[in-house]
Length: 315
Image (cartoon, rainbow, N blue to C red; front, side, top):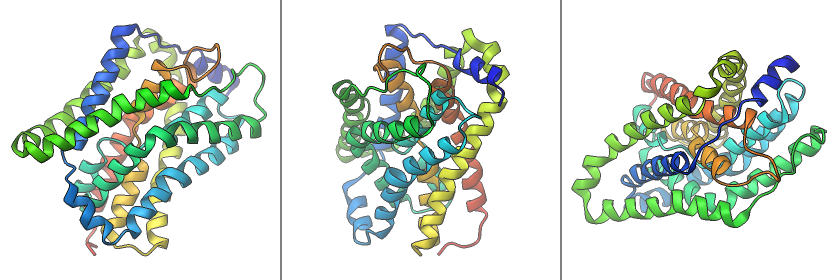
C-alpha cells in the first residue's frame, strides 16, 4: 500500500452529534437484547458438564485472537498505518458478534456452546476489552516504532466500563429476563431483532462515511484485503484450536464462527463515544477497519456457515 493511499485512509473523519451517537448506542443495545433472548440458564448447565469446548473458545477469543492480531499488525508495518493496526487490535479485543448464534445454527454447529461463548465473552468484555486493547495496542505501538505523530494511547477506564456495561450488560440482563418470564415474546422477537439490527448497522456505516465517500471508495480495496487477512486469521484460530483440542466437529464449527465474528459495533461505539486517545479525534484507519469488519464478517460468516452446512461430518 502506497503512502498516498495510507494518508488518504487516515484522512477520513467521521463526526457524529449527540443524536448520531445515541442512534449507534440504541442499535447496539437492541443487538445485544436480541442475542440475550436466546439465552436460558439450562444452556449453561448442559455446556459446563463438558467444559473443554468452552475453555478452548475463551482461549481463542480472549487470548489468542488479540495476541495474533498484534503480531499480524506488526508484520504488516509499512503496509498499513498505525491507526489501521490499532483498529485491527480494537476489533480483536471486542467480544463475539451478535450474529454468531445464527451462523452456528446455519453451520449445524453446537448452538448451546455458541450462546454460552457469546454470553461469557460479552460479560467479560467489561474488563477484558479495555485491557486487551491497552495491552496489545501498547505492544504494537512500541514494536512498530510508531512516529510521534500518533497520539498517546489512553484508556478512560470509567467511560469504557460505563459504555460497555450500558450497551452490553443491561440489554443482556433484560434479554435473559424476557426469555425466562416471557418466552413467547422472546421467541417472536429474537430473529427479527437480529436481522433488523444488522440492516440498521450497515445503513449507519454507509451514512457515517457518506461525507468521505470518495476517500472511502479509493481505499476500500486495500481495506478489504487487510480485513480479509485478519478475518481469515480469526477463523483459522478457532478451527485450528478446535482440531488440536480434538473436540467434536460440530464444536469446531462453532469455535471457528465464534472467533471469526466480532462485535465491531462495540468498537465503533467506543471510538465515537469515549476518548481512546489523548487530544486526538477518532478517525482514519481505526474507523474504516472497524466499520468494514462489521460488514465483512456477515459475508464471511454466511460463507463459512454454508460450507459447514454442506459438510457431511456431523459428529
